Image 1 (spheres, rainbow, N blue to C red):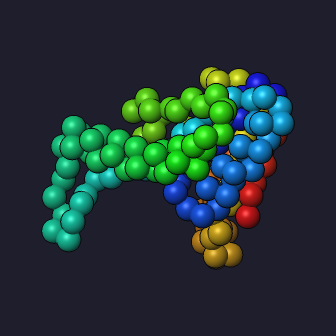
Image 2: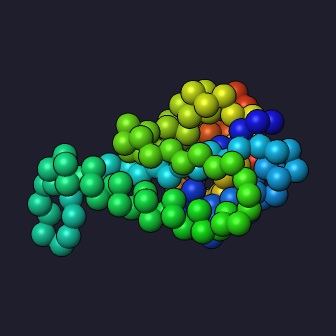
Image 3: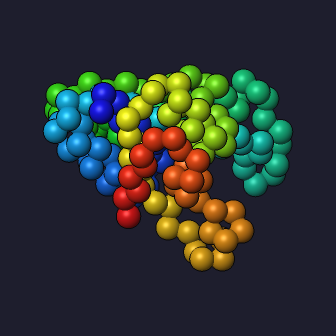
Length: 145
């Protein structure tokens, strides 16, 4: 298992998943690929005002950077090979679709991600990112609660 993909969103479960991935990467001498995917933002503030594409991309990259930096702090001193995915075409979009794209593009051996913890009603109507990835991934997916 050369590569482990770890999508994080800054939640406790995603950071817990990152710690599991760190332990596995140490045991198998694997590289961790770290990514945060943001859904597009169309409005900001109380008085909706359309954002320009440049402003939207800047805001999304700032949010992604904050989450990734938090993940890098978790891995600090681990000595692992870490690749961070910052491509704006990847970090912006439907999280499940982008994760599935990265699984294929990076030829990862494993995906480790946190569960969202949705209510049963919301899970029924929209599903969770982790469920969608698990159902459609050609590679093993480890979901951490």
